Length: 381
Image (cartoon, rainbow, N blue to C red; front, side, top):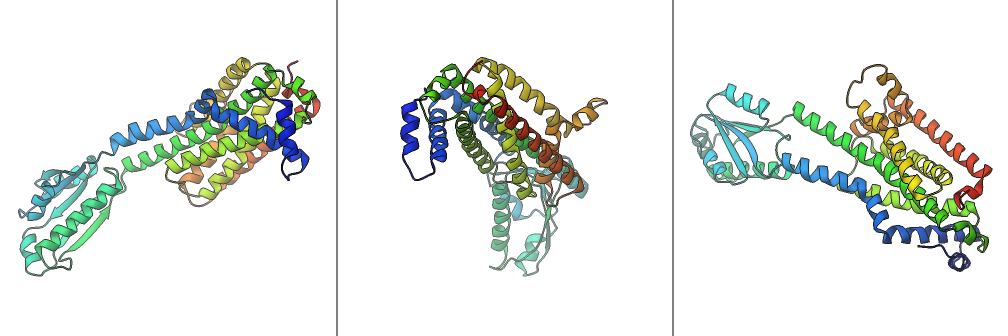
């Protein structure tokens, strides 16, 4: 979409905002329309969402099937086992000893139930026998687990009176598999969030600048009231809106943020000006969208990849030391700590300070670049 001086002038004269803000909003609105109507920009903006959904649907969806695996140790031929066998959402694994039950629960991993001898007779006689049930959240979705709990209670009531005629001990299992799965989920969420800022966001704004330089935006500006600074602020506003929309969508699909979510939001708030500064700098240096794609894409992969893997594995020296001082290491490590812990640790205070300092540096470099050569964002050399 080509920028028109008449369009910018007309939009700037309308409305009650001060003149400079009307110019900025006119440019941002034009860019938002272009982002929303261009297939290239839509795919670029939604790339992190597509990656996130592919993982959630293909990996988590496979691991969390609607069938619950349950190990059953029944020492008295209880009707409770018959009722569970008739439920198509349950797959029972009958064991013949307490040791076998524990092995299935620990190594499966799966949920389990130990039904004592004479359980049915005790319930019918009004005695409340003990019933021990292990709930393993590493197997099955929470909704299926809740349905199984309801089935157990319903069937026991049918054996006795309306009040629950048994003492049920629900044991929540915290397995290593569950912990690893939660860590992986957090890691992939961090990858998605950083992709939104540094792969989609930076490329989006930088391409808006370089494409309009290719369209002779500088010539248009001569006949409009907008200056290069208005153009920069307008594109930053459009980029911010686009990034925030995609961020909100990912957080919604993730079911919210865990741990110390206000701290995680603070990290993302600091990351936004870093992302915009990188995109403005790249847009001012690149002379074409082709240069922007090849330079920025590779640079951002090198910028992010070491930080992604340095928090998941112990890297050999000197790579471990080198990667630990990269700016994105402080962002990724800080987000990882914030999303998995509810308190602020000393390490996270250091990560936050370092990332905030990097943001100040990037904003300062961008401001210096624009002050030295403001025309670089609207016209090729």
